[in-house]
Image (tube, rainbow, N blue to C red):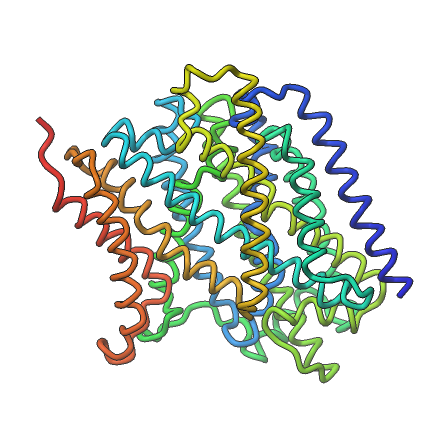
Length: 483
């Protein structure tokens, strides 16, 4: 019980540090500072901080857990991520900088008008809200099951308190605060990852080199799946990974909000390239950690797998110091799951749905007040969705997030691809909305029936590509040649 007490103290100290950073970075409370940090963020700070945002608690908990059944197959997706980041850096970022965008969805408005603009931003709001709350739920649930239940603290109180903390330190500073808090959190997360690998190697009495030989003996090092019918076939994973990155990073206001806060396009591209290379290395380390955890579980005859693997071994079977490191790293993975998302959702809703830039009837002080109300609203929505995830209690959150992304980000992918790859015009009316709503339902039916229709063939992460392709086709059908 004493250990549990000190772990909670660490959580409170950690929050105090975040609050101090927020106070230092939020002296300017204007909307311009909140939305894009006045475009003076340092590219190397953004690059490092984005690692924590991209990884979050999902990578920290779920990726090691997949090694037991899938080996290193997730690395196929990571290779796809890298391809996607190249596209974001050299195709999408130049467009955003040339238009000097605050919200990236203004690009759709410049091409097609108000309806496409509102549709794109609405799909982002839905997608990011679901994805961010799923990530946040995963970490809160781990803290609850392995730490707070023993202290008699309810899951619902935990979720409320953590969201309240996030709300307090993000309310004023916006993206400028997020850039710096994400940097701190990434440092603690990666430090925790390296310390955990080192300590478990000590427990197994293996060097890092020898550990890979041992992982190979247990068939954990398999990287490429050549079974074309499998959902994790390497082509499906690589293409799916690339499209996930293009849509979930390049067409996502949260991720791009940080990139366009960098002063120049060249520096923003440097940020993206450096970040993508580091991300490959970090994911390899997470997969390595997963293999080591399974080796340890086998050696100690611990029957655990999936998302429960890392927290169970860390908090119930390893030395106390390992538990402390795990909790600090886990908390560092927790906050980037929500702080940047709530900030970006607030920005998108204010800019894209409420039309702040066009509201000449509102004074700056009134806009700030309205922005804070929206911020409170998204925090409340997050809380409700976390409670919903608790009710559903999905055991593999990473699969759930990537699956949902295939449906909700597909229309965004189709809209942006149509805007970039064609010169055709869309009618500024309800037809765009109809196409973007019908296609995800069609893809869901195809995905759920593909095994029956295609002799056991699974779409896997290709559902995002098919979604985008069908959206593109639907938009083409309602479009006309630009006069």
